[in-house]
Amino acid sequence: MTEINNVRKNGKRPFEAGPGRPRLALVGSPNVGKSSLFNRLTNSYLIVSNYPGTTVEVSRGQARIGEVEFEVIDTPGLYSLLPLTEEERVARDILRLERPELVLHVIDAKNLERMLPLTLQLREAGLSLVLVLNIMDDAEKLGLRIDLERLERELGLPAAATVSTTGRGIDKLKEIILTAHEQRKT
Ligand SMILES: Nc1nc2c(ncn2[C@@H]2O[C@H](COP(=O)(O)OP(=O)(O)OP(=O)(O)O)[C@@H](O)[C@H]2O)c(=O)[nH]1
Ligand SMILES: [Mg+2]
Image 1 (cartoon, rainbow, N blue to C red):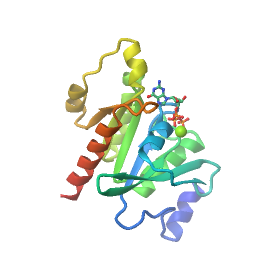
Image 2 (image 1 turned 180 degrees about the horizontal axis):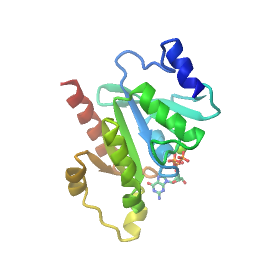
Image 3 (image 1 turned 135 degrees about the horizontal axis):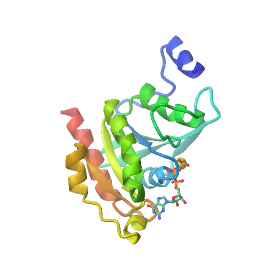
Image 4 (image 1 turned 180 degrees about the vertical axis):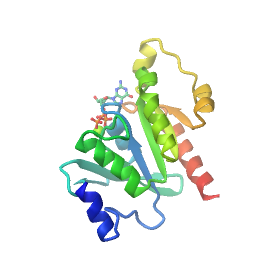
């Protein structure tokens, strides 16, 4: 936890977003397609660095959605907000210390039920959330049908269905991100 202490001592956060550049963090379990989604959302400008005080690499890039330039952060895989590994601690610290304006909880649509407890934890933590049901192609191949509107209603969160390897659903996800950003400003 030294990195947190250092951060508090000099009163600075590890990275400052540019003025007027809201942060968007991608979080979720390992192997759900966060990095593929990151690549879909961001342009070619990318910074990969070790999170301060750790050997964990974090990628940051920019995404222009509508007229808004977002800073996008690809966090390491996380199973719960009670971290066991260094990777999980980094993901949790990014959420706690960098206070992203919007958190995209990326889940594997094949394993919806197993992944929703983390959605609830993130919601409990007071984060502004969008649920991204990724890997929809495989879920459909397995015959799974997901009622997105009902899920949105029951969770009280916006949700998008995506296939980050082909780009399916990304435009709709961008619309949801922009709407959430606009609503936050008003
Ligand atoms: N079929 C399918 N495969 C996907 C999709 N999105 C990602 N993948 C594949 O899933 C694997 C993991 O993708 P990553 O983007 O590395 O996942 P990640 O969440 O960043 O993984 P960690 O960084 O280890 O937590 C890769 O082989 C991707 O090609 C999708 O929508 N459909
Ligand atoms: Mg990744």
